[in-house]
Amino acid sequence: MNHAHVVTSVGLIFDILGAGFLARGLIISEEMALRLGLSYFGGDSREENLRDPRVADRLDQSRDAKIGLSFLVLGFVNQLIGTWL
Image (cartoon, rainbow, N blue to C red; front, top):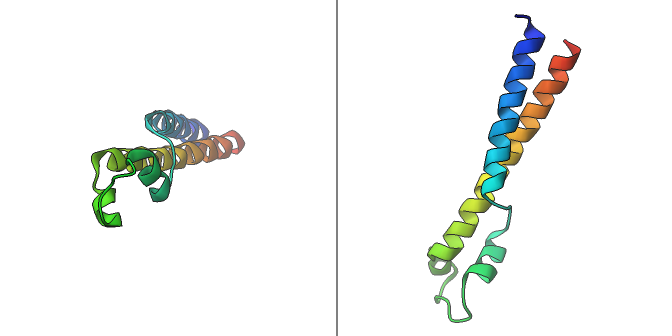
């Protein structure tokens, strides 16, 4: 097996992992998570509101999407390098 096959294979694995992470959530900011996850009668402080399970879940989805995007970029770059080796 030559180097091109190894690099291309690693790239494909990163693509698969990235797609899985992106499927789990969307990238949003803390402000958006607070707006979408809380009622108008939320907690008294930002820290308290960020601990709300609905807000925390939206932030977890956002983190997963960022990780997934990183895996996809790494995978595509590996495939591109593998093509030229």
